[in-house]
Every structure is written in structure tokens, then in C-alpha cells.
View 1 (cartoon, rainbow, N blue to C red):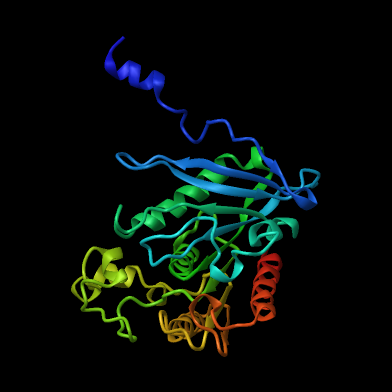
View 2: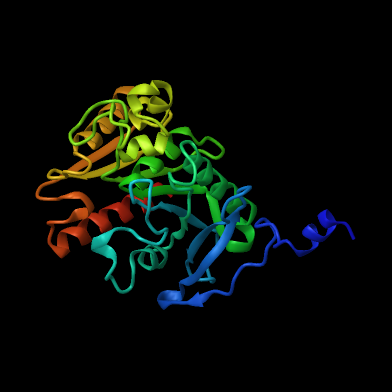
Amino acid sequence: MTPDELRGLIAAPHPDVAPLPPADERAAGVRELRGVPYGVVEGGRPLELDLWLPGADRRRPAPLVLFVHGGAWRRGRRDDMGVRTRAWRPGPFERIAAAGLAVACVDYRLSAEATFPAPLEDLRAALRWLGVRADELGIDPGRTVVWGESAGGHLASLLALTHTAPRLAGAVVWYGPADLTTARAPFDPADPATMEALLLGAAPATVPGPAAAASPVHQAHADAPPFLIVHGEDDTMVPCGHGEALAAALRAAGAPAESRTVPGAQHGWVGLADDEVEGIFSASLEFALSRT
């Protein structure tokens, strides 16, 4: 047996055909599957996702929420919706699944692993895999809402604006960067040390083409799916002008965009009372349900 034949024999099954891990049963019939491989990157780590699936007694495939985590494109965990939801029991993804929507929380390559557009390509790969395994999972990827927070909100926006097969049903964007070309304190496009520069591999001002391609405000178009954009008025990490600019760009293009700025809210909903955070989550879930 040659080395190449041996490698083929001992390699892990491709994610398209690999057996799914056993599901853990949660309340309301929700099933949870952790660490499901969806992609293989040559020379890199396997890409995985976690799944929360509604009860198996459904009569039709469940719509899907594709969740994209934050962390400045540099860090973060796929199953983290932000600091204010970490102590929820049941957690936010179990709540979404209990409402009837499947949830896929996806890994993507961080900026120390690969620069843009790698993370966006990974999200597209996750959608492709979910389509391949849809019947097995009991989901309908043709009815997908992408939901992201912080850097994940940025990637969610870009995915909703650029993915066409199938077109997404909607996007929920929590305090996501929307423009990598315009200075908004503390962000300086000429600074090569910002998280945005690390995402692009260079200071945005020195690579205007990639910076515009990575800016949702420059990708808005009339056929964009409906957006819900929620941003804290007191956000000092990603100023609320980002959310306002994205909503304005979508509306100017003729696309539907609902935007809300939240008084007293810092990044990650820091500064809000628990019931206010619950209200933002509930409104976002209602939007996702209305789109699917």
C-alpha cells in the first residue's frame, strides 16, 4: 500500500458523509449536537458547528438560524451570543430551537489563521454543508436567517448581502461594524494595528478595494433580504453610527431595514437591565420567526 493510499484509508470521513454525533435531549424536545465537522481547510483545523434542532415530531423541515459569534474576528466561541446571555438557563440557542427554528452556530477562521474573505467563505461553506445534510437534520436551509453579534454581525451582514444560492430570508445584526473605510473613533483606517487591519491583512486605507468589499455599507443593494439592526447608543467599541449607516445604505438602495438604537447600551448590551436584554432578544427572535 502506497503512502497516499494509506493516508486515504486512515483519514477521517469527509464532513459531507461523516456520521453525525449523538444528540443530547433538552427541554421541549430540543436536540443538541456539538462539534459537528462541516468543512476541511487544507493545512488548517477542521471547521465545526453546533446544532440545536426543534422536536423531531415536526411535520415539515424547520427553518434555520445561522448564528455568527463575535470577538473582533480574532477570538470568540461559536456558542457564545455575548456576555449578557451566558448565564441564561435555558440558553439562547435552546430558546430559539424551542420556538421552532433550528440553530447552527458556526466556527470560522479567525484573523490569525486567515485574512478576509476567509471567514465569509467559511460561512458559505457551512450553508452548503447544511444543504447537503438538510434531509437528515430535518431543516430547510432555503429559509435561513443569519444572526450575528459584533464581528459576527459584520460577517452576518456580508453573508446576507452577498449570498444568493439560496438567498437568505433575513439578517439580525447586533452592534456589528458596517464600514471599514471611514474613521469613527476609536477606529482609524490608516492604523495597521487595528482589528480591522488584522482582518484584512493591512491597514484598510492602504487596501481600499478589499476594505470596501469587507464593508456592508458598500454592499447594500435592492435585492437584499430584510435586516433588523440593533445597536447601543453608548457603544464605545463599535459606535452606533455603524448601524445607522448600514440601515441608511439599505434603505437608499431600496431594501427593507428595521433599525433600533438602544439608549444606555454599551457594546454587548453592557449597561442594560436584564429585562431590556430579554426584550432585545425576544424582538430579534420574533423578527427571525416572521421571516421564515
